[in-house]
Image (cartoon, rainbow, N blue to C red):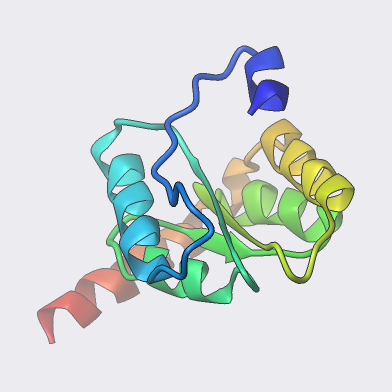
Length: 131
């Protein structure tokens, strides 16, 4: 968190606060809803593989969460998909690599030329909610 603070970012920590086994879904949903409500601008989610967190977060309408394990994919998640959440697997990615991944994602700029694809994604999401 000190790394984010050094960038001038405010941090909201949604847990978990112990090493006990927890259901990642509860934490991913809490963070995803904070993104959608505007309470936070973006979320970094961490679980064993990053997969469960990303799957859960992506169930919340308006969240675009990418599970990534390398800096290039993190950059593309923001640049091409305007990902507003990032999921990282603590059992898959080491601490230093995780820092590089987050830095690439934070430094990336969304490329608006990809907006038509995001509009299609939002349309699919809306249609699925209706069915």
